[in-house]
Length: 392
Image 1 (cartoon, rainbow, N blue to C red):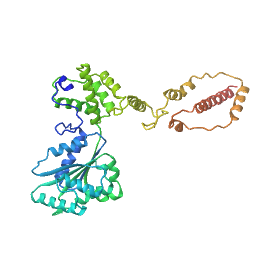
Image 2: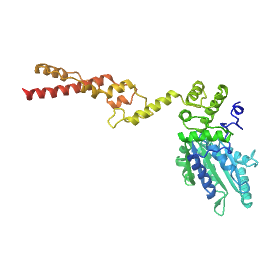
Image 3: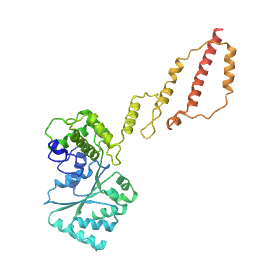
Image 4: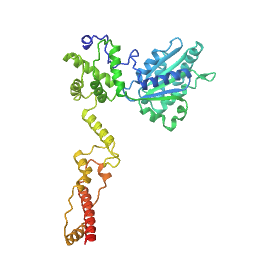
C-alpha cells in the first residue's frame, strides 16, 4: 500500500530473508567471515548462534547465494525435533536422493555414495543445518558421524550449524566433546547497536528505491532502536507499520512523536514487535541512576534483574545525613540527658533488617530508618554531654 506513496520498488522491511538486501553490521560481517573461513578450510564445523530475529538465516542465504555452484553443492536444512533416522531422511531429501522407506544403514550408504561421486566430479558438499537448537544431542552427534566420510584424510562434507543461543548449552554437554573438538570457529550474533539501527533502516529504504532525503530524524530512529532493542526482524515489523501509518496519515518525514503514535497502537497487540515503553523507561531510569551513583550510594549494586525501589523511599534514605546536619542541638540539663540515655538503653531489642536485605526486596523498612536516626541522635547527645563535661 505504501510503496506507491513513497515511490518504492519493493517492500523495504519484508520479513522473509532476502540475500540481495544484506546489511553488513560489524557482527554480521564477523559471522559471514567465519562461514567463509570455514569454507576455505574445507573441514570441521562452523557454529553460528544468535537470538531470535538477529539475522542468522539471512547470513546463511547470503553465503549460499555467493557460492560458485559449479564448485559447491550447498543445501540448507531447517530442523525440528528429529531423531537420527528422521534427520538422515531429511538430509537425503534435501540433496534430492531417495529418502522414504530406507533403513538408516541404507540411507547412510546412499549418502556416502553421493559424496564420493561429488568428490570425483571435483565438487564440494556443504550442509547448513538451521535451527539446530531443536535437535536432541544424539541427533547432533549423527551430524558429527557424517564428517567421518573422508577421502585422503579430507572430509567429503562440511557442515555449518546455525541456531539460537540454547544450542550453546547442547554443545557444552559432556557427550559433545568429540564435536566440540571439530568446531574450528564459532560466533554469536547479537542485536544492532543504536548507530547500526539508523544505518540499517536507511540502507533498507535505499535498497528498496527510496530516492528522497532523510525520511526519519535522529530522534525517531533512536526510539525505533530503544523499542526494538536493535533486533533486525523486530525493526522490520515495526518500521513496516510506521510506513503504513505514514501512508495513511500522509507523513513525509517521521519524528519521534510519529514513532510513539505507532507504538501506542502496537502496545495493545499480542504479537507486538516492540517492548513495553514502561519497561523501557524503567530500564533507562535504572541505568541513569546506576551511572550517576557515587561509591557510597545506598543503591549501589542494584541491577536490572531486581525490582526498582520506590524513588520516594530512596530519596528519604539517601538524605538521612542531610537531615542530621540540620538537627539543632539545644542545651538541656544533664539530668534530662541521663534520663534519655536510660530510656534508650532499656529499649526492647527489635529484629533489624539490613540495608542490603531491604534493597534486594521490593520495600524499604521504615522502622529501621527510624532506628538509624535514633542511633545518630544518641551519638549527638553523647558528644554534647562530653562537651558539657569539659565546659563545667
